[in-house]
Amino acid sequence: MTGPLPATRGAFPHARVAGDLVHVSGTSARRADDTIEGATIAGDGTAHLDAAVQSAAVLANVERVLIELGLDRTDLVDATAFLVDMGDFEAWNSAWAAFFDGVEAPARTTVGVRALPHPHLLVEVKATARLRDRS
Image 1 (spheres, helix red, strand yellow):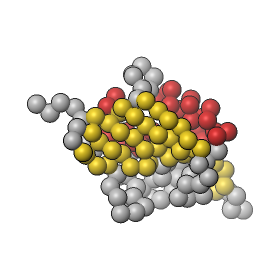
Image 2 (cartoon, rainbow, N blue to C red):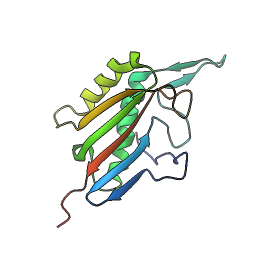
Image 3 (cartoon, helix red, strand yellow):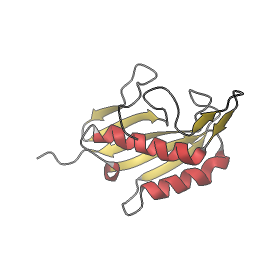
Image 4 (tube, one colour):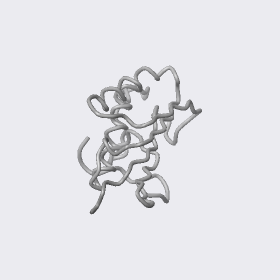
């Protein structure tokens, strides 16, 4: 994903630095224009939701937040994923494995939830990264 990050859907930042840690707020596959990567709406209004596409987009958006702070995926130390349907776990797990291919992945927890802030969202991630030595 390129371009600006979407505005947050509340009074909170994309990330907050505390000491030597960066806490990334819940991040989804939402684009800056408020559309959702991996959500296609047909002419009759039915939605086709793709968990694999959304999972990859969520991880890319988390990294985009980190890049704004001079970091990247290798700085992540912990992540929590929220899945609306645990049936999407394999798609999520595959996107995770591809995203961290060749680099050390952070600790991770995956939780099933009833809903996310938009009915077309299938996955959201909150994460913690470490700041690099600034000396």
